[in-house]
Image (cartoon, rainbow, N blue to C red; front, side, top):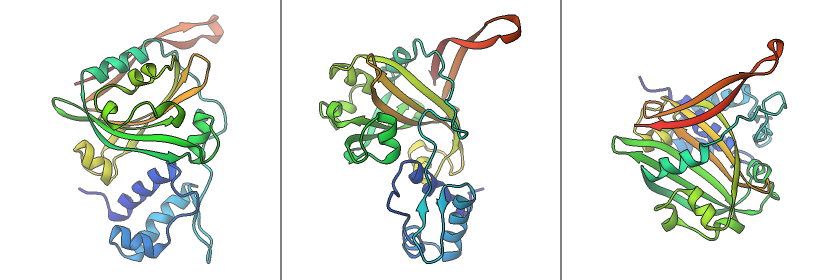
Length: 260
């Protein structure tokens, strides 16, 4: 059964908020009504859900504004997210890129939003390349990937190159020596845009990956937002326990991403 219209609008606006699109405030209710072709009560219900999650602030007589979001690499409580040992991950990602096909949806130079600037250690408004691609296997769409790369690096490749090679290969061909990655994995429901690109129903569960790539000098060179179909993508880890008996923790030894 399809999701209610208000929830579809909520999903779209939530993703746009996470991308930092509303630094100057959200569109008014009338503009949202026209954009989505719905009644005011539907728009208001979507906004109420965003407000209840602490994503926006609504004040009578004033423009609805976005509230600061958790910075990349931090948990909601402000504590650093534990970094996994990602040995072999970069090689695995390149291999996956070479065994799938890609459709480039968008490539554009944009100004860095607050979140993008913080992740890539840039100044607010600095130019970055935003690229949106859909990667597929022979069975169909696998992932919807959005990447942000500093313009000083990304000016060396564009739409044509992104349609032929994995972006990690392009980074290294541009002189970047890739060092490590910091990755978080969560879940997300597909909005109407993602549903169309990934051939799933609106509201379907997706595997959400955020990955920040650093070079050997610890400078961020790429921030990736990936949405994967869980029926076509599996993420696996091998874990070992280390430490003293009373303080043993799990440490990842090997990481692999499988697709079908």
